[in-house]
Image 1 (cartoon, rainbow, N blue to C red):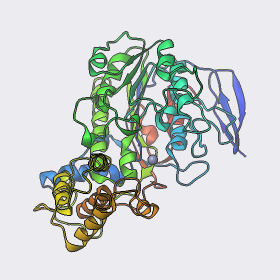
Image 2 (cartoon, rainbow, N blue to C red):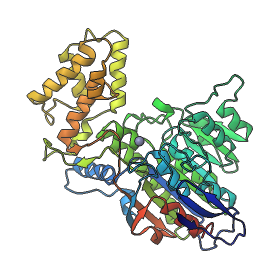
Image 3 (tube, rainbow, N blue to C red):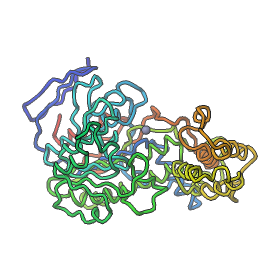
Image 4 (cartoon, helix red, strand yellow):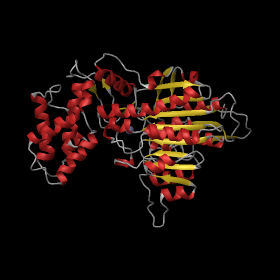
Length: 485
Ligand SMILES: [Zn+2]
């Protein structure tokens, strides 16, 4: 039995029995250490392993025609370490188990939100401790506010899909700022269940969902739920590659949270780049690159804040796990033009799937010939242009995919689904062909067990050197803050 001891200046100590062992955990809050950082940023790139960040860097260099890795903000942080991500139940974690580790310092089973694997004990998150210690708390994500990664900071559920209950926990959290997507289950299942947004309003949250109301938010507002006016599948922000600039970006949410939460009390702000993971599940490299760049822009906002408050700020950038088994290098790649070729893709695989679905709904599927579709493919993916000539085999793949979706209108069979996954066969085939030419390899449409990078700058940065585990991160920060020992 493993025993972990967290002692603090506070007297109250409780013994927690879990599935794997016992923990001594201080339950009372303590005064923050005066030398501790006042402003803590927690950046979590969901699914963002080394390859995802590196893909964005080689892409930026390649489109300039240089052989280099153009450094992102996250690569400029002085501490660059490695972290394992396994959960209590699996080598390959899920976002709720890994999020629980990053939020609370405890391993749990896949699917669990900030509870022990037996679902008997709630684990307190670093964000809740920050609130108890009178800091302001902000939670920002590019996916829905009730999704696994944001949820682990304020909710405790035995299943990550309990979206309505998670939403109610958000309303009851007392945190000061929520920004990002919407709610996957705003309504309860029983008649008379309060809507999540109404529950939040009843608890004093100002709920805004227009750019104008968002921009009008000024310091002094007590509690805010800011939902992006433009939402796509899963109540999420649009993929950065599809973004028309008519909503609120992750960087703008981050900037607003800083503006509203800044003050002597200090703040804890968590920012999740949630759709890096989704783009990796779809093996959509161009979308991954744009998601990483949007996430890195938000890190840039925190870096600007750091420059003004270097002694008082700590920024930690990490990932919950790697997704896709992504690699820079692929059989059949165009070595001369690799990576830069991704610039020809104009929309995400999911947006292209949406376009094909539109064609079908408008009854155009039987009218569109393969030649018509080749023009569309060239427009959205560049496939067939001077830089991306299609060979005979690729034409066969495209023709087969065309036959599966537009050429043969009707239901997509299980066999076809197995071959192409959830997205449209033509969208999948175009993305696969472009990824291969651009030199991006994938081994899975799921998560992997690969350790991921941890980056840090600021007051306490040295704590993150070495080969770490995800549970170490919040424990180190909470120790630095003087909340646990
Ligand atoms: Zn995932």
